[in-house]
Image 1 (cartoon, one colour):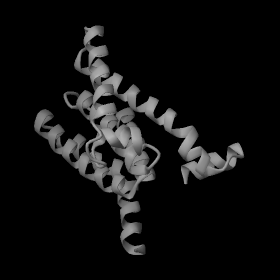
Image 2: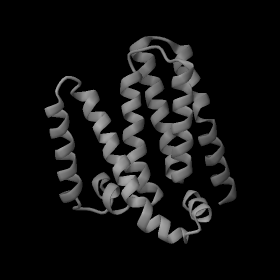
Image 3: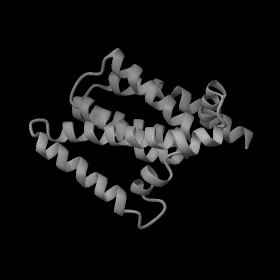
Image 4: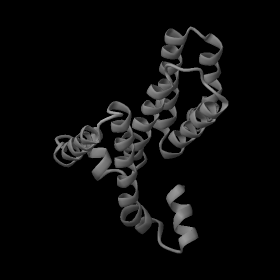
Length: 173
């Protein structure tokens, strides 16, 4: 639906938008997520950050041994919903989990989680289900680390869109 809307707004055929215009943008977005992960893992060393992103690029370029690997998803199938989910959204979601795991969650964090869950729903049905599972895992880990059941339980409400989309998928199938 997203690519169809972009095609309608731009006056370009949605297939052209999906296969020609959006892949470079989405691949660039995927590498931006890798740069954020590198900045989290190596906060003081720009050299280590660059090396991390360089090796991720090497792995993405030459790691296409199977069609279902995350590296293949980023470069060859990024225009598909599952490719966007595996190459961009799930790494970004886990990065956000790691950066928020040792602190109390704020309203901004809950809003950001809700937006990410909505994005997961919009790219793929698998994204709706994986978003729920990832959020449940994060809630459990957040409870174990911070011993705050209220904050961890409130994460369920970030998945309301996921629950609704999954319900629609199951009932309409």
